[in-house]
Length: 233
Image (cartoon, rainbow, N blue to C red; front, side):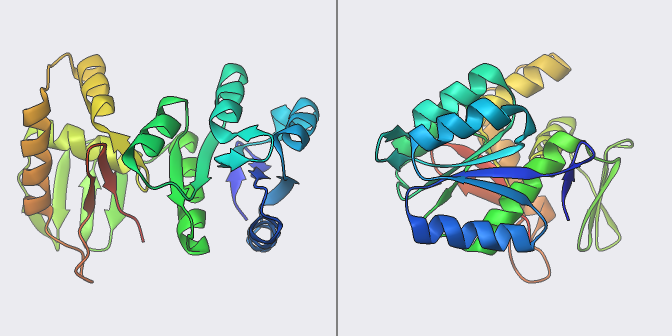
């Protein structure tokens, strides 16, 4: 089971396709999540009024018979900081940016693999539940306290800026981190200015230094025009 703040994680699925919604609900329940379902914005509003404080994660379809997921997302953000993931058939850049701009934490494009969605949910839960001083991914080890990186027991030399970028990516593993988020976080936390081109070069160098996992997959994925994501298994 997966726990958030000491309680079983509760997920609300807003999806008008009965087959997708019911199948997804059943799979998530088998994995230990508590699930509630809504097939329309009207149904969502009734559930939300009664159970808002108990819901940890919202899975929102974008296009619904009586509204849209973007407006629902804004409503949720006005009242709380729960996790919001869009389930959308729209994989164009404008729709993705709109979803993130209105407060979404992540998005999954239909048709999606359930394993991928579950990984995204878990990544978000871990992100807001806090992390540890040591992160390990196969043969890669990142020590946040000592700001060191090793791969296959070999020390990797990274600059302070590269480590800051790496830290932001790992703390949001599995999630898309927008380019402007890097600028905000690095300015606020470290008091240093990082321009657009510097970020591009820094990520490129990180990719080269880290190499690939044993299965050949890269650690960092570039989301064209939006940002970057630390890929998880």
